[in-house]
Image: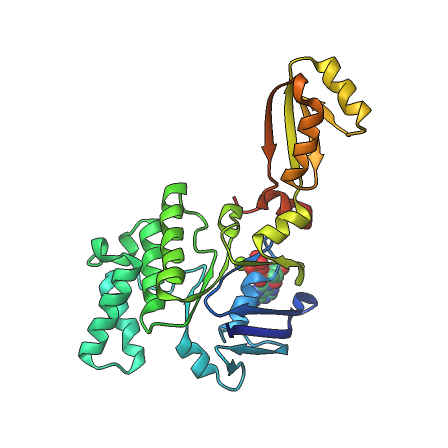
Length: 305
Ligand code: ADP
Ligand code: MG
């Protein structure tokens, strides 16, 4: 697999504030790449630079093989972008917006119609395509924004918090559309999100805070490194269970009538269960989650919810 995006020592300051402070990363072609971090971490600033909309101070960037700063037109022609704030005209219908957008790409009439139809189908906007953008619900707007970004069949789609502010059901359906873009269209997806259950489905995650990259890996790797698995036991004889755990030198906490035992990985529960087997009334093995990873790394609750 080639690299869709390569970034070396990318920097951007706003006055004294180092919004992006020398970051390095790459994105594999065809991957769903999630960029995480608390508010103000520098995610949007990074996206704005990669997509040519904000001048960088320093750093080397290649997008689809094109060099940022020298081949910006080619970069723009090969990417689609869904910004946090929509760029569509509220007074025009979704379809009119798509035709206006498509008009930038030097297409013939029939090519333009085909491009609009394809983008509308993939982003699933046909049910409300004749309605003014300003009259749409949040989820419908997001879909229209995605359709706009797809008009010229980009190789990479950038989405800055595409699901923020949507109700859970709508969020899920927009998220499914994003997954389909990757899996069925083979598009590289670069997105930022506050939602850890979305990040958990990414192929690769990069976590940013205070303008720097503080962790990276697959969701599995990050959970292994930063989240704690645990074994929870309800005892049929608490005194006997305590004794068995003491004898085996297994540390535990007792809370809400349950014994909580921290384990390095879920399979480490097995020998402990063996030792306590006859004193157990019920048990649960809980894997660490991406929420744990985020809190561990940034010391923050998942903000923006
Ligand atoms: P994120 O998208 O991770 O929430 P941003 O990239 O938007 O973070 O912002 C990073 C930091 O840069 C924040 O402290 C923000 O206030 C600041 N910032 C962003 N854009 C500007 C700007 N145009 N002028 C001044 N400061 C900015
Ligand atoms: Mg942002």
